[in-house]
Image (cartoon, rainbow, N blue to C red; front, side, top):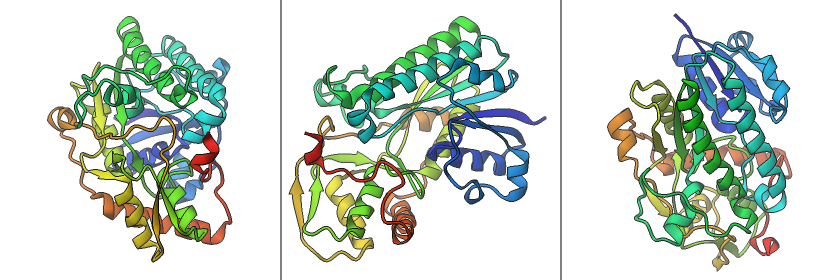
Length: 340
């Protein structure tokens, strides 16, 4: 029997790739719901698949938008949110409004449905202060207390909404008799990931012939997870019989420096100029790498794609985009100095 699946945030980077994986690897009835579908769906789905998918375009910050959804889904992937450093700095009020509204509206809608299981997408940002200020171990596991550095800093508005979401979904699930699982994503990347993240920003700057090339946060470290691995971890968390009520770190344990990432992109872009160190972005933690042993043990999660392999295809996609378009569709590169 076909599973009936809803992806709320189905037009986003992870949502689009998740939908593609599910429609091609599972027998399902798929609904994708989002505020807009800016991505070209033909890049993710065949014409036949598009005909079989139920696309719902609406503003889910309004509770009435949920009236357009069925109430008997087997699985609901709750991925919808506003993300991006630029958004938190320039529009912290919108980050708070949109993310908290969607969380609350989704939970209130779930109370009226027969939905069996929900997966809420969270982020490593939820424990940024824990590792940075309280010096918890890195790689970091799921038992780490959640903490931000400065409640006044708009940079942390996104993290605050995700902390709220984790608590809300896990506690509503116990109260209203559905199962909830939380996944914390760690630097998911890949082709067409949007323009809010470090890799598209780097390609944009190399395409603009920046020289010398400034390495913002050169000595910081991150662990980048290619989208295919991120999607598979997400599906495993949803489908596992023992994942209900649990939190999983989904990402890679390959920790690299930002300088290493920048130079790798420069190599792909055939850059031969000078590199110079530059200031770190405000609110950016010095190290981040997940401990994914719980996801490996409980879910059988095994990331397969080395970051350099994923980086090559990602950079090529953005090179092609910027060769045809003079600037990013949204949230293009913004110099660190302009954040101060």
